[in-house]
Length: 84
Image (cartoon, rainbow, N blue to C red; front, side, top):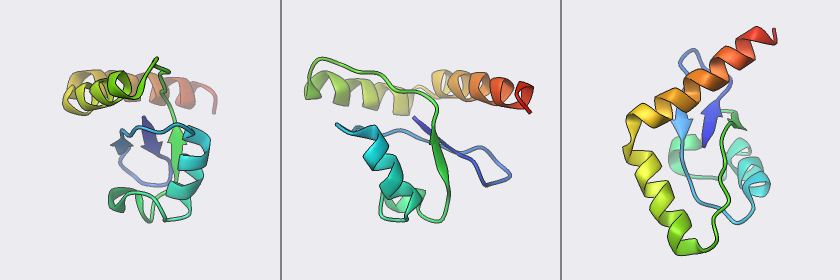
C-alpha cells in the first residue's frame, strides 16, 4: 500500500508487485498506474505471501476494505507526524 506524500489529502494506492521498490520508483517517475501519475508515493504497508494467487486475493480484499486502509493510513500519519 502506498500513500501520497506531496498532496494536501493523503491518498492511498494498493497494488501487487514482485518488486515493490522497483514499482514504487516507476510510480514516482510517472510510469505506473494512471491514478498514481503526478504524485510522489511512499510505501506504508506491504505483505509477503506465498504465491501470486494469494497475493492477488489479498490485494483485492485490501482495496475493498476501506476501514482497514483508513486504519493503516492513520497509523502511518500519526507515526509520521510524531517524527516531525
